Amino acid sequence: MRYVVWAIRIVLALLVFGFFHYTLPQRDIVRIVETEIRRIDFGENSIFWAAPDTGNATTAGSSRDVRFINTVRPNGDVMVYRNEDTGWGWPPYFKLDSSNLQTEAADLVSTQANPQWVVMTHYGWRTEFLSAFPNAVAVRPVDSPDVRLIPWFNIIFLTVLAGFVLWLWRLWDRFKERRIEPIVDDITIAIDHADRQADSLKERFWAWIGRRTGRK
Image 1 (cartoon, rainbow, N blue to C red):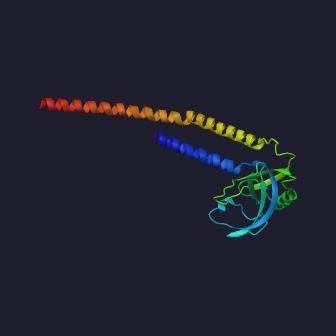
Image 2: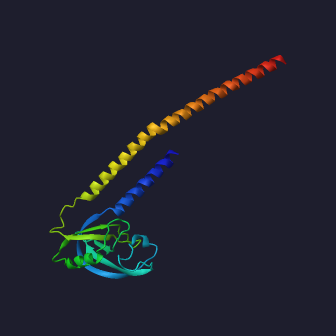
């Protein structure tokens, strides 16, 4: 049973880690090589795509145009980002300017001979098996691919979240100590008292049986 409990804990921990890793912003240093618009047919991977751009028709469909930003990392690896509005939905980036971002990205296109490195802020995963792409939310130029990026937002957010969870845990611990544990103690005492009474009645019953048997 202990292994089952630990397995459940590990699965829950992985789910929480995956949720935050997908949702929280990440930043990559890349070189933009092209921007384009593709017609995408949605299937089982539709969960990894955002809704239509804010202000457009929201009728569900099996395909629509999606903006893409094609990039190359400093080590030569290719990374492709989609560029979709998040609107007022989840995750709460409130991104409403995908058209502007596409224009900014197009203006930063560069060649290998004369590279313009940029910091691409995004969320999500690149999964070739599921044809899933991270969603770009911001782009800004940098002078060098060696610039150091510190995820201050993630650090502050996770620190505040950890503090909030710890506060809730202590609040629950105090509530349990003041409210639940006394009730459990009273129930335990009542059960022990009932057991003692049952034992006493059983002893008296067998003693009566013994007396009756001895008379016979």
